[in-house]
Length: 498
Image 1: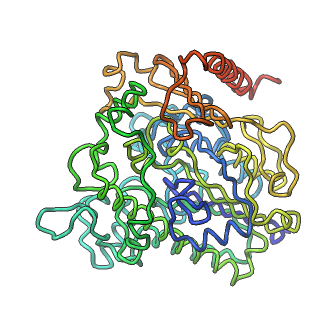
Image 2 (image 1 turned 90 degrees about the vertical axis):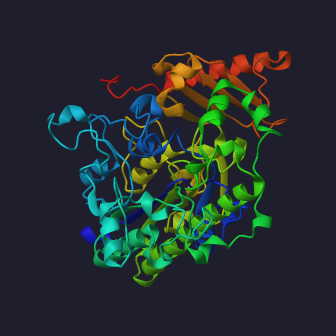
Image 3 (image 1 turned 60 degrees about the vertical axis):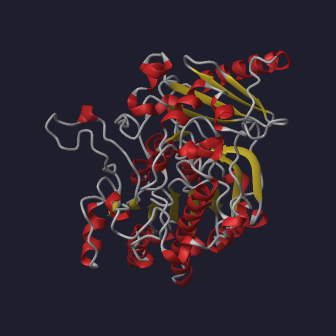
């Protein structure tokens, strides 16, 4: 009976934009394995993360909830102990959920003694079976690197530093060989686990840190995409024009450093020259290609060992990356580049044969993944979930009354070294926004700053705010009403029926 239970491979690739893989026909990373995975399953072309940076985005995946409900607003915000998360649901189904790599979670301090060193630390939730972790100070990886003969220094980031006497520049390939990268190290751990578990059912969460900064790829990947073939950033004609759109954008442009993407580059991200920005994008795409190659090893092993035909494969990201769009780097603000992420679901069963290779254009979100995983294992969506299962799309029977917008939230209190509230003249608890994106409009509502409305038919790059334009005031009011209805209908109702 135990051997009949299916397997699940959940892959979360950190900071992977939706338009980066080759199948997206966007930035143009070389990703033959991801392309084959998309052809084998269903890809969701309008899929969005619910928050940024990592902590909020991953909390929505783990709980199935919008940020307004789980309230993890930063990487340092604890996840409430009262919330059940993905690994706990899996244990109740008889799985010993394994984790390799990176996930980012802070435990609820109310459940810990005041002297417990876990208070305030970035840790992996206790319900995961930790096979190989890449958390916190990455000490396990650094120790392994030292065993391979590297001088690891005092931190993971120090591996990629650009000291003046090293002969390296910010755009030099990684000093770490491809076979010793953190991506390769994590995948090696996943392969060992899958070999051990080949005859027993398993659930594996493979969390890859790359293509997270620093954007420094191994030599074999760094130059895979010609600089001339990399699309130019999507942005206004000048940084001054971009800053004029909203006070938050101006604050981000005034404070975001170029080192958000690459070590050793002085100045602000908005002042990067075109050649440096293209080289940075090329390095990012090189990291994506490395992720693709390593994931190819995982799929190959599953095929060779006969496990792929009983394994659900789900791939997504916790958030995106600006990469110079709107003169920004990292995952900041309200722009879709920070929240639009890929999603591929491969169901090996015959019920999914008719949709293989198709793209779903409905709005889907990372809150849908927990209900999807449980649905595939025969369980209904928990009451706490705001999302719905995506399996009907995979089986060619789209659900009725599906959402017509995507939503994401962002807390910007840590911008400008934690002085965003002071710089913007608002209270700390007012440093938040929510985005509602539909076919026709993108509406951004702030707790204490002016709203934004972008007419996507005329302005697909989110450059011109028409919230107060005479011809769009009715549309702005309608969007605000729809947003209020969304919040009311998705407020936490876990205990309400009781």
